[in-house]
Image (cartoon, rainbow, N blue to C red; front, side, top):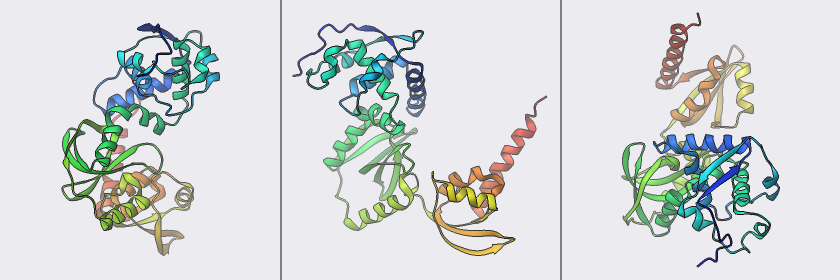
Length: 308
């Protein structure tokens, strides 16, 4: 039983939060609300941060003194938040100098200055990440709602995307490896035990994760042929996010190299679509047609909605 350090915690507090911290929390409120298909209030996400925090990231004491004098927010603390604020004073020694309101301000300001991936880990910790990790430890299947569909899978691991933006659950569903963005998982529950994975299948998925990342590791691999313009090739050489690695250059045409990639059509679509006319997808024809259809649809939208 923890000894409360803050004895008289008021249910309602008035916080001075910097404009920057408010923008980050408002943005996360929209993102996580959209992912979970339910609106989140500012107070809901603040209470989630308070009740979930357990030394997950460093608290920067100097941020307590940062003030925007027009930026006050009234927050109603939930019972879970009040319970979470009952801790041994040795856990956070600097709190001896501050009030509960100042401690919460420090927590929120520190939260707003960590990466999105670290914020996602905190917001989803209690309802999603910890139950998945428990199921993995106990070799139990999990059942959940994923973007409106009911899924039951044998969970293997949680992996951050290569670009460090989202986390994914890797699991085996109906005998096939699948990847699920954990922010889209809802109503999760544990089911019966699954048969332990064999080493050969773990080697397979670990290799796919290393090469393609969790975003594309479970997609079928195809041979993608791409012709670059000189500007497109420069962009490719400096790109990082979702970047496929070419395996060979098979020919040159009009000084424009043709590169051959082994990756999924989904990864090629994600990566090359923003290049517009700096690349031409040559093969497979199914992917080439997807680009044609998407660019045509975009052009029709612009032609239909010309400024008057």
